[in-house]
Image (cartoon, rainbow, N blue to C red):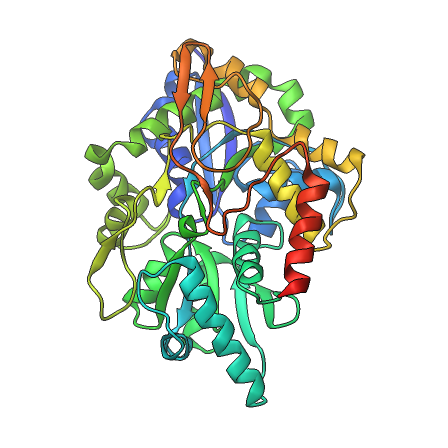
Length: 409
């Protein structure tokens, strides 16, 4: 039987594991696919090479797919998120100097998002009173969960991310060097780069972003919408292969093998020991500390991690509106909603016999029961650290309330 060749782009992060495993462990080949994986350092390169047809699909930032369809800061090219590649996996890390300032204002290793945010807020105010320049925080791309999680946390703690600090974009593999050289005071990035900053002795992990929004959405399997329409069989096969690979990656019995594979220079190129610890959700928060366990730090398959919820797409859109990246409109909300495709995912995995929700969207809050074809599937406890609830049917109200909250702090 002949194989269909597909070229996929990825960025060296721990959550590229699903596409790597799909290729290396034969899941793709079993579906009649021959994958070629191409490593890129920046998300802008991933976007551009998908747009111009160099890549058939990619390990992609969820908000990037939405932003491309909206034509924000680039040409308008409709994309789809055919499945999610996992939940969580990000962290906010600061320089040793900033951590000392935060600790002087009450921050402690492993404290809650509210405690750490209050300490950072007070440190920023103290700096301003001394006439010092604003702190600089980096994230990996303007349309990324990293940007929105960082902004959400700052704003909820009384820090205006567009006034009180400076935000800049740096590709993931360059962030540790930027922190070491004093170019930035902190960053939000996916694993394993925060752990690398700790291992290098230049950073302290303030928060895993699961402390901001537990089981938060992250990367997707993204492709151009027109490619998906003309390659339905190949896309379905790729979804099945990646879904099976995600379940394999989530099995702790496979973490040693997976870490060794990802440690190769052509993939993540980081110590297998660090990768294996991170796969287990075990993080060293500072160079001086012992490792600590972070529950559900990165989920490849469990908690419905592969389902592309339209509510996730609409939350990303709500942040684009909130932070004035795009003007709100019903048409734009509809474009965002249509980017995430649970219908394509359901059809593709039907033969695998896995539990798939019947609903396309859900209210993002604490645990709720999601009904599927076999009965009831209860996903893990979710929710934002400040107790806010996101209802995908009331995006405008949500954005308005968030803006008012920041104005009142």
